[in-house]
Image 1: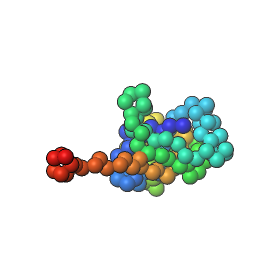
Image 2: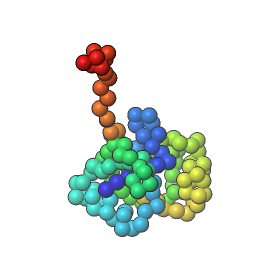
Image 3: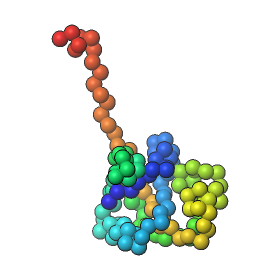
Image 4: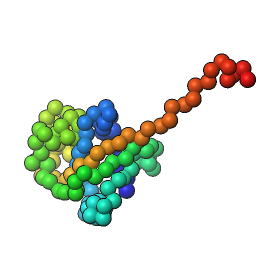
Length: 131
């Protein structure tokens, strides 16, 4: 499975501390992630945005807790930090990412992110060019 971090990729390690995301997923997607947890399939791809919109693979996530639903109104400051600290207050988070709807019950995904490490391009020396 693939998890997209379009709005929040800059808050993932090593730049940030994000280890939690909240999503308004269908029950089908929620159940698929819960089944993956139960089956021990914990490693999933992370992308910069949906691949069909030009996203790129940016790393892997490892689920560290079974996904669960939680009322957005129960979110506290510690949860805000786990989300990456993109905004200063919980109210600002709800306004920005959930349209201000405090009655929603998003799915909470906790994960460890490992960035994709690309090999450094080989630098040519003047000797390589002269040959």
